Image (cartoon, rainbow, N blue to C red; front, side, top):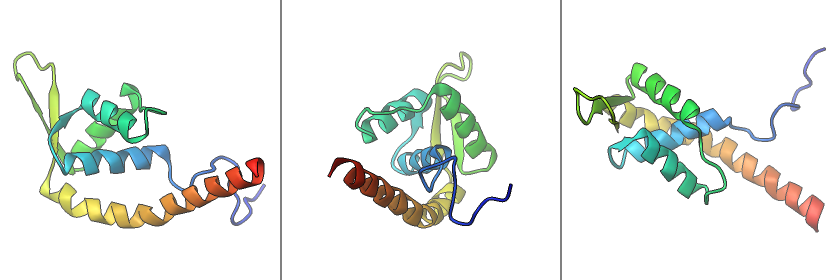
Amino acid sequence: MPIRKGRNRNALFKISMTALVKLLILNMLSEKELYGNKIIDNISLILNEQWAPSPGMIYPLLRQLEDEGYIIGRWSDPVKRSTRYYKITEEGTRYLPILKKNYHGPINDSIRMLESLMVSIYS
């Protein structure tokens, strides 16, 4: 069955949660070096503690961003390898404004859709 233009039965939002979390990670790391659990905590705070990504989401994204050259990680203790800190690279610093520009519209579209939903249901 062909998908009709403008319809998507699988998502209300115009941006995937994975893409949004990647944007948040790069944005946070552009300000300071962080480790995975701190990134999770910060995202939870940004979202008013209504949602937090799981470690099973964050750590693969950190590895992906590192493989793509946008971030670099270092062990706080190279022997124990217990806490890995990440910072944005020069390539990541160049990529972040592109991501922000690309996702600005979809994030605004998602906000407008949710606002319309609230008005429709609760007014």
